[in-house]
Image (tube, rainbow, N blue to C red):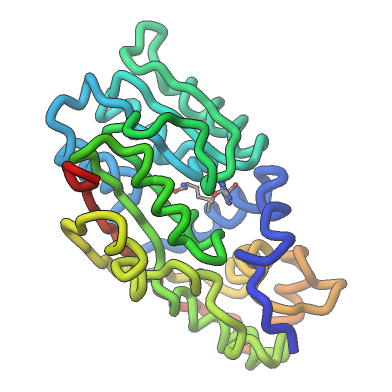
Length: 282
Ligand SMILES: C[S@@+](CC[C@H](N)C(=O)[O-])C[C@H]1O[C@@H](n2cnc3c(N)ncnc32)[C@H](O)[C@@H]1O
């Protein structure tokens, strides 16, 4: 049985070598979502709360992905500078498209796109008023050096907004995948979020930053039927599926339909928002 974690393993970067997997995953989850605030809006609200002079601020969006949070930050907070940082050129290109499409020609915010590993940010010490790291710390086998690096780039009193998911996210799908025989060990696979999840994020952060607020919000999803579940499953690297099935929603849907009733499937994921500040004398 495979016990490795595809989110932190040696091939993790291949998950983001183009934007298609993340776009399909986000689309499947978005269509299923029945409860939970839009994460980018919550991040922008938290950012505005923590900045004394938002329009003068420098914000780093670390692991910016397709620019979902960056776009809302540029629109709602309008910092002086937004640094969109990601290891994947494809994600940075998608972020550039998304953010620039939403920016008016006379936008106040200067947006810079930086390709970098979040273990080694190409930024000076104490150069950012706020750093956001949403849904990316779980790609570090040990997120603590990344949080140390985030601390380094924050100004004294600067804030970090760290966002992750619960380790048990989408667990009902593990049981469905196992019951259908697609991956009999599905329920024993490690959580994709095992290195940074809602249950350990505070402990990971406390050695570096002064923790302010932690909020947990349950998001609920209702997949309309097995085609919809399959659209999501085709995008998750969690399971060990027969090779003919991997990444192919039609083949996955057919295999599910042959084994389990085609009916709506409920799943949950609890989102954790942690805000923390760098001490004045850090
Ligand atoms: C699930 S996406 C999250 C995107 C975005 N923050 C959001 O909230 O939608 C994770 C992102 O982290 C990036 N990432 C993973 N490992 C990284 C690393 N070592 N350094 C920088 N970015 C990384 C990936 O390329 C991907 O774009």
